[in-house]
Image (cartoon, rainbow, N blue to C red; front, top):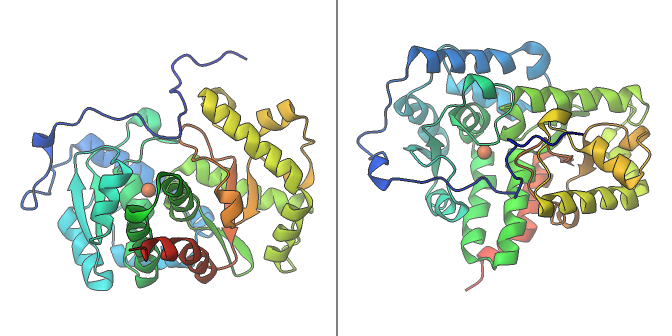
Length: 337
Ligand SMILES: [Fe+2]
C-alpha cells in the first residue's frame, strides 16, 4: 500500500504553530467579520450534521443545548451571541483566541477560570469531512451546546484543577480521559448508544462511521437492542479483552512510529491492525471501531488519535457514571497540597 507522503506524522499531538502574540484578541475586540465563503463553509458543515437521521444518535443533553444556543445555520455566530446564551445558564464565558491549537497547559489555566477558548480558524473546503485540527466549527457546534448546562460545567470543572497539580504521567492520563469523554465519548440513553463527544459531533465522517458501528453491532447479533445493551457491551469486552489489548498495543506501536495517518484507508486503522495482528474480524471485533466500556484502566493504555479515526470509543452507562469515574481519578489529584 502506497504511503501518503503528504500525510502528517501521527504523534498524538498536533504540531505547534508559530504564534504571534500581537495577533491575539483583546477582551474588547472579540468579533470577526467573516467572509461570505467562510459563512458558506459554516452553513455546509452545519447542514451536513444537522440532519434528523444523524441528530437522533446524539445524546439528549447535546440536543437540548443546541436548542438553547440558537445558532444561525447560515452564519457563524458572534462571541457576544454565544455568551448571551451560555453565561447566564452555566457561568462559563467564551473567549476568542488566535492560537489554533492551544497547548494543554494554557488551555487548562483558562479552563480553571471557566473560560472556554474558541479558535478563529475555520477548516477549508478540502477538510469538510475530517480535520485533525479543532476549528471554530468543532469548538462552537461540538462543545458549546453542552456548555449551556450545569452538568457539563461540572464535568469540565474537574479537569483543570487536577491537571494543574498532576505529575507528567498523570497529565497524559488526564488528557486521554478528556479525549475519550468530552471529545470522543459515547453514552447509553434510551437503551441506545448515543454520541456525547464534541469531536465526533463536529466531524460528519467520524459521526457517520460511528453510527454505522451502532447498526453493525445489531445486524451482526453482537448487541441485541431489545435487551439492556450496556451489560452486553461489558460482556463482549470482557470476552475479547486479550485481543482488544493487542489492538491497543498495535495502536501504541503505530503511534510511536508516526504511522497512524491513513487517509487512503478512509482514516480508519482497525482493519489494518487486526490483519497485521491476525485477529479475526467478526462479531464484536468486526467493525471499523471498537466500542468498550468507559474504564480508567483501559483508557490510560490508549493514546489520543489525532490524524486518523479513533480506533476505539468508550461508552458510559450514563453521564452520571462518567462524572463519577472522572471524579474518582481527578479529585484526589486536585486535592493535593
Ligand atoms: Fe474539543
